[in-house]
Image (cartoon, rainbow, N blue to C red; front, top):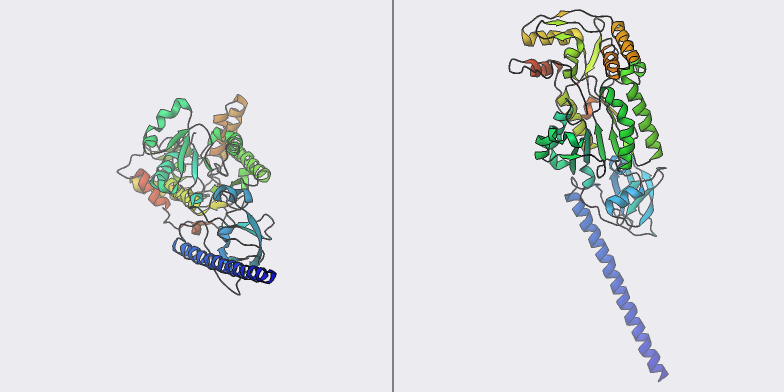
Length: 443
């Protein structure tokens, strides 16, 4: 009886082991099938996937090749948890294949689909999650624009609206009493808000005296969950030449320092500096002493001095392209982009005269005259006038240049030449009355 019992027990154990073996094999085959499907799905949805990868089975050890630039978009484990809804992470070995690729090799003792990668702070290892990636919402930023009613803000809002599908949300900051000014944009889908909450990108177009408000904007933005800030940098590179000492750019210097400090304090916060040179529309205006009726020009500057200029539509292309190609969590704390053309003031006035079939009389004024008026405004406590004259004293003295080499190659669109910009602004079919006055880039 004992023998029969042992025999039956042995058979039962063998059958159980056999079933377990079959179950294990089925699981293994299922995992391989899922892996194959995942790889095929990734290949077919490469353009829409947050990351792209290629399976390379070698000796039963799967590898994943992921673009380096795509890996560095993810900086923190918390970011991955927010994007992919949590999950368990396992360390992986890092192997450099060349300057453009990183190879992630799964540890034999751990299991997980390396559908998403994360570059650790020390850059010595990677993390991967077993959760499949969700639709690439990270490529659709929620953008909050400060200064949406200004001379640059209006065309920028229009540009974003034309590409509305690429954004989760588009909003402009507005005082409740001024909401009616944005009625047209609101009808097209732009939100009118008074809070940064719910947005991950802020584009600031604050100018003149309003630039001093940017550190407070940055504080409020970080508190509201913003992760990427584009400050009002437009103009020359304030880190070179006379800009660093000029009163007009003092608030920009403070803003840069504040951004750098906050990026160190909040590791998931980033910022980008976009330097364009003066906007062509702003340079060729009464700000620089142009009288369009009398065809005279009396700028504060020096003959033969060059300046870097960029047309406003060109800037709108640039920042849209930058947002499209640089995700919210871009690795570099400070990444400057340049997009400007160097030209002399005499050449600009020649183009203006050609368009209007007129000869402009050009008389240069000593920049020190503007500096004296700036000092008078400071003593009178008139900050707006102080900043105004500080700007006039520096634009045409050879300091308002973007240092070379330029990064224009990063923006694959046809740039508008200065001559084309002036033709667009002052051609026979465009009186351009708005741009013939001093452009106030206000918030």
